[in-house]
Image (cartoon, rainbow over all chains, first blue to last red; front, side, top):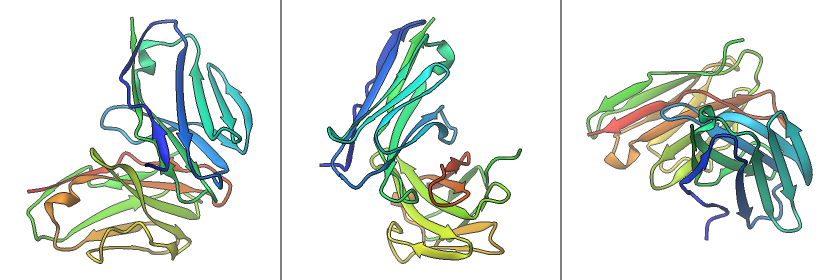
Length: 110
Length: 113
């Protein structure tokens, strides 16, 4: 079993819909949690960065961390075609060695 | 400001040859990281530098892989006697240190024939 599990999708939604992404993990020592967006043939771009449990909102993006359930989520409101990408969750015990999920491919249909 | 840069963007080499991949971190970032992204394995940690020291090399897959960092800035990842299974995208990231997020470069796509 992988340390971080993420459904690879693909996920297809109409423009304006809410995109819901999630990851589960097994290592209870993880305390830093991130979401990255990766466009084809590009490097990962940091979207959200949270420490420990709780919610964080930035524009159309909301990240949630539930350490008791070992579950993290990313919500994208009012999705746009430009949000079409692969979304990677990542997490770390001590913020230098990141463990990544497999990535979820999202397509937002115009 | 300028982000993390990597060179070359693409590298095609023959099995058995050595390759060097370069990473220029964001100016002022003291920490530098190398990862590898392949279809079967996803994104995997290779090595971490704090300044010019590498406290964690645990992700390097074999002794054919080595990395160095000089002047607290540029880093080079060297793969000796390349094998076909080394074909992947090699990503570099940098950060201002503990407790701060990592920012990635565009990667070097390595193809070993």
